[in-house]
Each structure stands twice: as structure tokens, then as C-alpha cells.
Image (tube, rainbow, N blue to C red; front, side):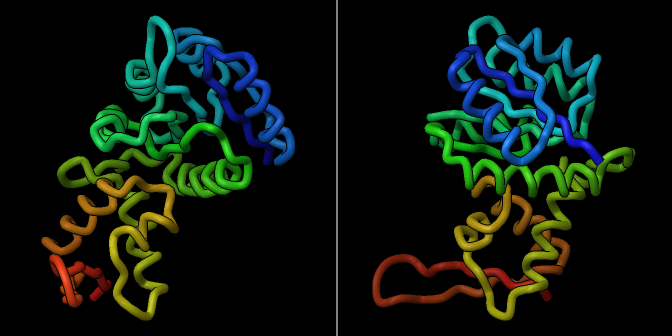
Length: 203
């Protein structure tokens, strides 16, 4: 089954780099230099995943994400940014993005993130009931639960986030949701100094 990736970046050199990375994985590529062009191309071609730059003229990454979500609620959208601030991540998550990749791009990391997001996208593609209580995404919820199920010991949020294509604050929010439903146990580990470190285990 062929896979099509939509690359959205106003920098031609970055688009070329991303295109070469995708071609290495034998994925088809669509290119857009603006957010508006991306939305129009998405509506026509229905790609499997979107790589989207944050800083662009006219429509930035946030507006473009919102416009794409009007067309498709489940397609994975990976944001490309040099900005690591948590408030930026929150803004994109609220707009509907599914993951982040930091610039400068590292090919192995990006390929891994794309593959995982494609897998999740296919799991939830075509389902109407994608979002459940409090805006929780069913596919993200299941990926976190499945990962915890495979672990023999409790894990910190950082440990979980490092293995999944999900931002730190998203993992934290979903773990709180699972704790509230009685599906996750929070275990506080006290070190010699400072605040206790919370770890999480599936019940």
C-alpha cells in the first residue's frame, strides 16, 4: 500500500531535504510552500500524513493545522519547529497536531516519528468516534496504555514520552485521565533531595 506525505514549508531547501528523507523510505511526496496551498492540496490528494512547518508567512502552522483538521480529523500532523517552548506545543496540540520534530531535522528521528504516526493514523482512520471524554484521542490513549502494558516496572512521564510520538504535556494529561478512571496507579519515589518523582503503572 503506497503512502503519501504532504510536506509544507516555505523554505525550498528544507522541502528538498524532507523530500529526500521521505523518498529514502519509498514514500510518495506532495509539496506546498504555503499553508493555504497545503490545505488546497490536501483536499484534492488526501495524503496519509502532513509534515508542517511552524513559521510561515500568511498562514502559520497553527492556522494551517486548524484548516486541515476541518478536512480530516484523524490524519497525523507532525509540526517542524526550532521552538521548544511548552506553550507553543500546547497551542499546536489544541489546534489538532499529533507530534513534533525539532529543527535541524535528524533523518533517523524523523523517519521513526513518521512511521509511528502513520501506524496510529491507520488504526484510527475512518472511525467516527476518534475523540472521547474531554477531548481525549482514542488512538493516543491506546498507544499509551499499550506501552504501559508492556512494561514490567513503573515509568516516569519522561520515560514514556521518549518512546512515544506524544508531547510531554500530552502524556501527563492522558495519565491524569487514566488515573481518574482507575486504570493507572501513581507511585511516588523519594530521592535524597528535592521533590518526589512520580512514576506510573497500568493497573
